[in-house]
Image 1 (cartoon, each protein chain N blue to C red):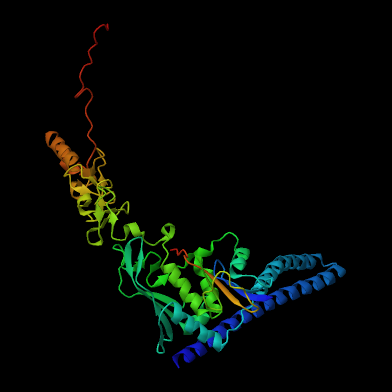
Image 2: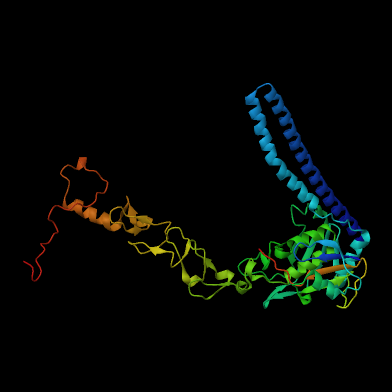
Length: 73
Length: 353
């Protein structure tokens, strides 16, 4: 099934991605961002905070935003 | 009603921005087509020139083909880059209204300023590394969104400014003159605005404001309340900060002095003194005596001679008056001693013959 993944780390692209039925938001995060810790990110599904065992559904909108973003000069 | 007005405005701007991107793509493909046609034309002309044995003309055609052949791959890669850019789905009115709701729910009240077409939110008071910076207003000028490629359509206003002591323009380590340096968030912020994801935009700006990156700050938080004197190491605040005109470092009042000629401020390591009057003298105002090489101030040098050399020459002129004063030259002359004058006989040392 397809979900919309908006990754605000780096380029900040929004893309539809294919996932297996029954994928939880925690599994999804580890799959897409294997080197990152979930605690360092604000994760929203359909604009709402969800528990980590939330099972994703077709057309869900998942947004991942770093809690800390380095500014510059 | 405000939210619908702004949602419409925003949709119009995003559409304009997308039209501009399509127009850019059309321009690029048009240029590529022209260059390719030029290549084909020159090829045809070269063929004709060879048939008629016009070798000079054939050479010219070949050269033009060579130039076009170099340009075409570069132009094609530009077109490919534009085509590869992911097409942004135009948000709907419902999407934009949902963005407003999410902002209100997670980031606080959103203000709609119809006169300036500005959407704004206010952050909570921000403290970084124990330095209180106050609260900020993030104002997004919706009517400037389609110019995103040229200028930033938003500004950061310190509501109760606690700027750095050394610059009132720097209200946050990553904000100067109301402009946020987005650093790692730049691309994500741009994409959020292009796609009408207003919550993501405001959220990321808030995240940057709440993050301190000492490796790339306008002013380090350790220097926020003023820097340290480069000489004595004491605290230096803006009101009593002195910058050396030569080494550009910060000093306290006690560790600087003023040049007696230009009145510029200098630290003690960068300033000397006049060899004649001992007044403080910077390297820009120093004059060198042509006779003895003394470094003096402008007051102690006349005709390229320091006061002592002038006195010496005057004394010499008095003791050896010129027999023909009408032919004497007034310019100072280096002292020339007659042979033997002032020389002492060197006696042999003990054990020497």
